[in-house]
Image 1: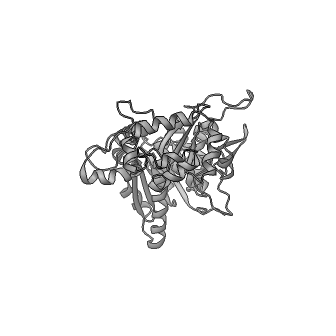
Image 2 (image 1 turned 90 degrees about the vertical axis):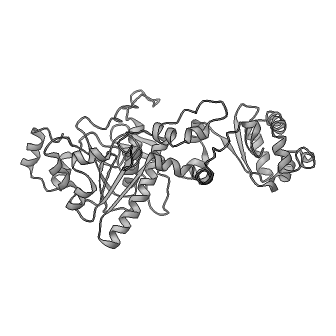
Image 3 (image 1 turned 180 degrees about the vertical axis):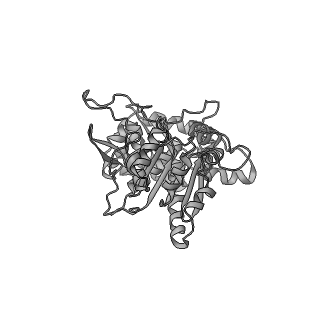
Length: 402
């Protein structure tokens, strides 16, 4: 038994943010019906490329599988005149309706919270957008690159002085916002269960970006001062910095409290630094930060990262390797902690993918099925909603469903 067994979700979404929330709900046990346009989610096949070492293995578009595993697919032309009545019948016995439609498109397609709650008064209506559903720019479309990283100040916060903003990694902001959407849906389901009344929730890429920066934004909201950008040689503390080792691999130190300085000096074999007047206090280490960073750079360049790791561990010091993605997928701790799981594909066979970021002891939260083919379950979903076979045929002939 999974925690969301018996929960039915109608998902009208594309790309990665909202679909990632649907994938988490599906892994948690919900029945998720992905309603797609007749041409399919634009993400279908977008990242498809042969990656598997076996050339005879069918290409399964692994990025699409991540955000759509465990769902069923129904193809519906929301712009068709008859689509509104179809959607109302679908949500009549659903628990959750989730979408990434902008407000004006929700109105155009007849799927606003007001309209759907009139059909199902206990429904949880959840929306994910780029910038929110109210305000002067609620109309604006947004991807995570523009809304989360760009306007949400994440890219600026990652930039060093006089340097360009770093290139965002694909869907990182999408998946972060998807987690916020899942949290809101779970809370709304609890409220609907207790009160018998439906709930309306929303989140946005912009909102999620602000939450990830909340530690710095909290004082900025008070003083309206831009946090300082600092390069490696001008960090507040040398023990919160990155260093390259002899094998050209990097490690990062994080020991923010002043009490770490003496154990650090002892652990790395530089006990004399603890009493050196240039470094003996936090103020001195800050004022002489460039010189100290240069000394640390020279020191870390004398040994490989793994050797430094053993030295730092022996000293009880806090550090981490700055790994590549290849190193992460091969990391034995990542595997032991359950970061990876397996999808059973009917054509390609089993392949590994990323596990949702939660574990429940004694409960298997691995994907139950691979991502569906476009419209694979259209007829079954319609039949479950009470459509007779002749009605389904008429809808198909009219181009309403596919």
